[in-house]
Length: 121
Image 1 (cartoon, rainbow, N blue to C red):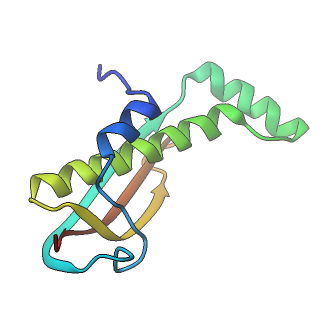
Image 2: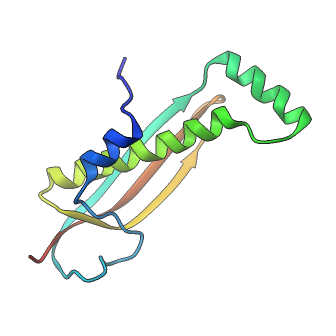
Image 3: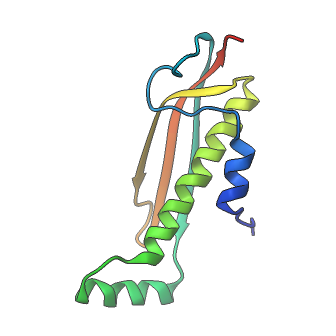
């Protein structure tokens, strides 16, 4: 089983690699386009959490276990996106988009994709 990293560790590892939803990095020029990159993660919660979520759906309110799972997954997916960009020799990622889909009942895939670029010095 892969051990999950803390958010702070993930953010530290990504330090210095800008990730932007726009097609540019403000104040920087793109020297070269390296290619399409992505990150993905499929998550499932423990059955006990599903029962608690079902109960919460009857009384209303936020299902915090799922909120935490999705937020952590987004962080890991962006980290994987950055790792793929670095492997191509890029130092930034532009045009990033994120999404999610159900793979099988009880699971969710979180994904992100964008364009790896090399910035001018």
